[in-house]
Length: 382
Image 1 (tube, rainbow, N blue to C red):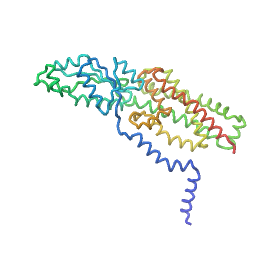
Image 2: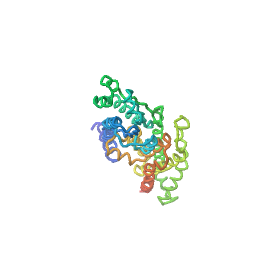
Image 3: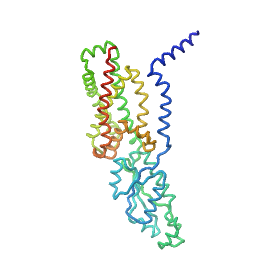
Image 4: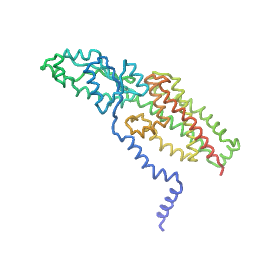
């Protein structure tokens, strides 16, 4: 048998002798193909949640609301009495656009003037905000209040003036929370969050992987045979180093690059510390599964992109299929990035973010159990 063929057979045997390797090689491309295809399956953002503030309460304003609700890109979820209602809905993740119809809307139309409305857009998510803005412009440009001639003529407007009164509605646009529509304001925080997750898990996994040598494991077991004590010691050491650095890193987008911050720094720092602790523990769990620093690093690098995409920070979760959204809601990064964005740009308080904070807290005991199992498996001397 020729040498190159012997090497081919030897390499195939090497690959298939380790389930971790052949699973990554064979199922990795399939996994990524299915994941990315599922995330972008819908192809566009649809049914942006919209709140209506109708101060006119006329037939014309109701017709306009019906036109908005008929758009595939918009979905009227309710009515508010003031702008503060919309702001609170945005902070709770319930709405992203708002149409304010003033009390003089019908009166202006009867006097032959254009109807004026105010459109408020959630600028903290530029992609959703742009979709909502374009959809509303389309509605205002195509829906003409004068399309029903009989109604206009019945209101006292001559037939000759019907066309003039059927002009598009004039909209005043007011982006909230990111009025300059600065894309870096939206993106930089998300990138910082995913970097914290990746670096935290990678550091914990590699440090435990360094104990893979038999002599090092034996030396550690001689100090303590209790996986709980080993976990507590390693966790404490990583917390002392990683959390202070993470708290500095999370401030960089705001203190160094000038991203606006309107909320509570103690809240952001506390949630960051909780998030980092969860991922230190998760790093120990991954190291226990892989049992080597190299494989741990490779696994973490392989999952970093899917985690970020599923978090919904770049591509909105509302544009993903329902089953993909549910997967994203299971990830701590989804909730952590949401907390950082809403606190910094919107000034959201803890009581508005309790679902996201609770989701991260729930991960704490899960990650403790995972880390304990990982260290116990890793420290076996057989």
